[in-house]
Image 1 (cartoon, rainbow, N blue to C red):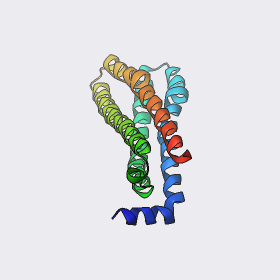
Image 2 (tube, rainbow, N blue to C red; image 1 turned 90 degrees about the horizontal axis):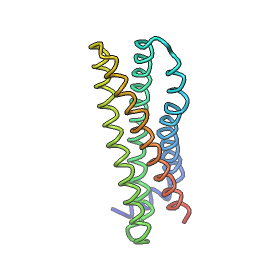
Image 3 (tube, rainbow, N blue to C red; image 1 turned 90 degrees about the vertical axis):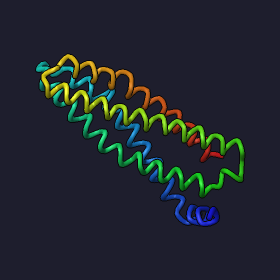
Image 4 (tube, rainbow, N blue to C red; image 1 turned 135 degrees about the vertical axis):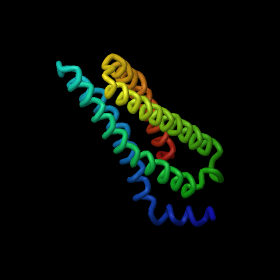
Length: 165
């Protein structure tokens, strides 16, 4: 079975790597755009209800859009790991593959926590709890998104090491 993945990667590797890299760029880039470009603009909206409503909508769109690329990262990462046969080629690189998988798993868990927290904030907003909504959004924007951005940079760096060797 492993020979199948090695041959498949030999034939389609450039497409798999492209999809993997572009998916990481879109997922991490989307979080960066929301954190450093969209959030400051949203903060300038004076009407609290309008501001919170728009932030919740932007977060929902980002999360739905990012989910597609998370799935692509898992699929393409698995294909690369099997296709490059790290398990049998280099113990240190194989360990780095597992470290990278652990980082992406943490990012995915954080993503699902963000999703849950965003949905909770939406319920708070609908019930008229603007203060609770703002606190949830603050936590997402100032702690959870930056954590995923940082972890994403680390995972990309490890990916460059894996592909560069």
